Image (cartoon, rainbow, N blue to C red; front, side, top):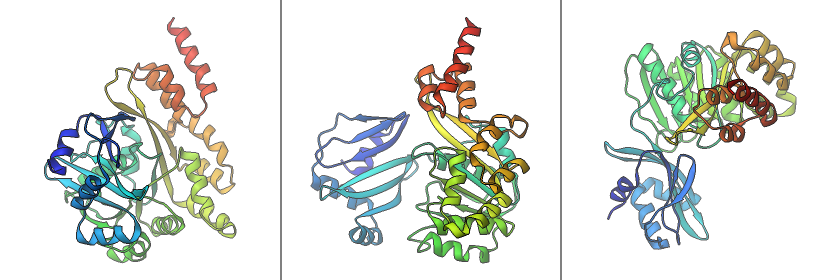
Length: 358
């Protein structure tokens, strides 16, 4: 059986990741939980054979030099994967993240449609999608990109590592650039991107200072910039961006960020109460004049209160989102507690709901 046949057999609804490691059967992550499969244990030689069957000659050379590599792999017409190949205990291991071929709408993804439409309609500024690994950041980012593509005549340049979702031109023209094959690095691509006449710049992930500062600069020059960032919530996102700058530049960074921020959408995936997959809890921070003032004055902890009381601007916290999901019967009490930012506060609110229902 070749690797494509094996992967097709393993793909089921709810599977987000597949792991291959020497001495173990393949593992799958389904609805957030890691599960062992009933396949035989795989030898180091078999894993190496699987890994090299996925690699192009160029990727093989990079992997042998670096001992780890991210890239995308497709089974035509079936599914795409984001693949990470690495070494552990002197043998090769692989992690494959499932990327559906279809790009879903905000409504289909159970995301707050009104605020995402409003943000996607922006003509300039910075929009960030935040969350931990596996929280659906890239899926949300590409859903926004698809909405823009369907509704506006823009020139869109994406810089990704690797390209996960393929987009075709609809109303917009989209050029997708992959690190390694189309450009050497995020730094190089962002250095020249403004000379490519973009209306929208999409950065796959803001990882380090160079990427963050280049993204903010692009937003400052009148472009719409979308990116993901690996943080746990909206407030930590603001702190992470400012902290990436050297101390003597952080005051200026606060001014720049306050001027360009359109919004932060953070998300956490929750197990549904009916056991049928997962549903996102979200947190939304909008760049209102008050939010900009708090950023400028370095009062980021007060942003929680701004979100809690910012319903008029379509803002809300994770705990407010979890309360809404629980009240609608979509998640259990235990799941709400597990995903809460302030479990004690949310516990009091949910008990109040239960007593009212009783």
